[in-house]
Amino acid sequence: MPIYFYFLLTLLIELPLVWWFFRDRGKEALLIGFLLNLFTWPLLHVFIYLTRLPVNVLEAGVAVTEAIGYRIFMGCSWKKAFAVSFLANGISYGIGVLINNYL
Image 1: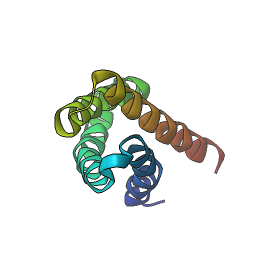
Image 2: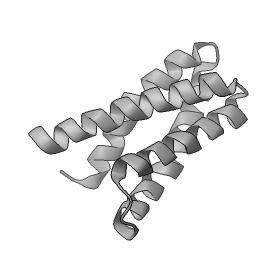
Image 3: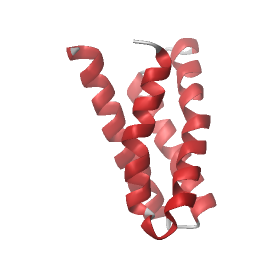
Image 4: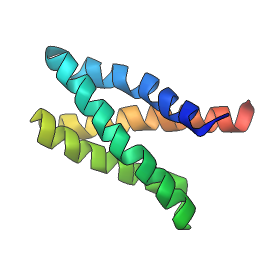
């Protein structure tokens, strides 16, 4: 599958969760979620190819980075920022693992 497929899949999985967590500011949350993924997704792939760090460690770094972004740009609590980020990234990472191992 082409690499952009995985980015689109990430967005299709994560953005609805981001919207759900920030329903009161839905459009803004979708934009922030998209922009954070636009930053972290390519960065993750650069680190995958340039380092020997396990992908799950890199993915945790992505989740922390995005949580900081949600905290800054959405002005939410740290608890909410980490909850949305780790839930969204965990689910998209898990689905990616399933796709790569079973399809």
